[in-house]
Length: 423
Ligand code: EPU
Image (tube, rainbow, N blue to C red; front, side, top):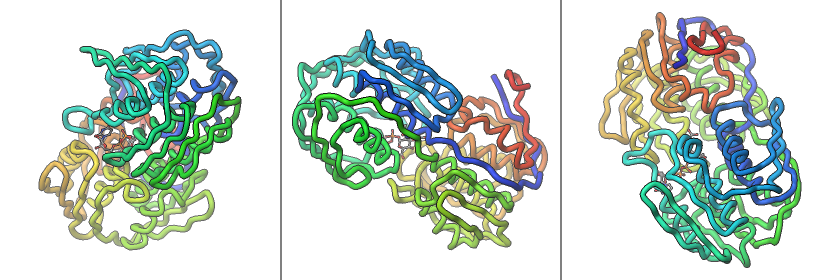
């Protein structure tokens, strides 16, 4: 297994470019199944999860031509509608393939999807199953597989029982070719949803309201060829901004959309982290003293759960106590145990809340990356810690952050990757 060895304490400075959004790419790739014509996706991040999604669509019979930062997909000759379990089991977003396959072939077989272990008892898919049923499908649940069948998909009215990002996106992908109109209420509003709708509309879909709680999808007969540039990854943007703030460094984050991380930038103002921003950049400047801040994770435009882990680390460097309340996932604070091993003063109140007492000096340790966002957090912690940190299981970082070690080295980080091809 590959690991990162980081010698902390180096002064970081310079510029870092944000890549295309993982959580947009993972929906736009399966959306290609809805058309028989060629689609081109630009600004594609070179990360494990994207490679898995492309392997999955290739296995279904798609013609996939990948080049640097781009892929062309043609799904004219798809020859099966069963997701290969060895790949689908590895990432949660594999469920995004189900709706488009159902819409195109009237049936689909898939295993329970995998993904980060951030929810107790796994991550449920009841909303997805419910959405296929509401559009007219029948669900057969086997021991290892789900089988979904629909002679015809018909538009419906649906109120999401809870706000779900992929639940909203999956409904859009399943309803786009359905007969009639689908009205969705209590939808998630993440920018990746708006991007997906924009992409589908460019192909001829009729989707209105994406990015608001109410979405209307007027079914169309077919989707045309198109090309699309993936929006910047807002979680990468926020992670880098927090890294710069925690390291009290001057770092410019380019090719990002500051509008998508407004909540974080507003908090930065309140906790005395100086920054400048323009249309597509954020420049973080060294803070003299960071103030503590209580954060509660929320659906967009609230504070993203995906930035909770790095923000918790940032609060270990603040002067005072902060309460971090994770409302979306009940295992996403478990990693704080590792920050404590590094010297952080953190009290776990319950699985959803921790109190962070700062500032703490952090010290290098041997750690294992438990999930993607905790993984990047440990990496940032290692960069500001005294001494050497070893992070094992870096698959759980590379899944979502392209060439992170190379990009951090350019900023001055002392990081190397061992036991991999990059030695
Ligand atoms: N939920 C259900 N039933 C469902 C679906 C979700 O109970 O059928 C629950 C979840 O367990 C969770 C809540 O609903 O408690 C909200 O989860 P949501 O469905 O919004 O999450 P998701 O769509 O599975 C996406 C991102 C996550 C991100 C969340 C929240 C993708 C591929 N994943 O997940 O990203 O944390 O939204 O913003 O878009 C990551 O990138 O590291 C990551 C985990």
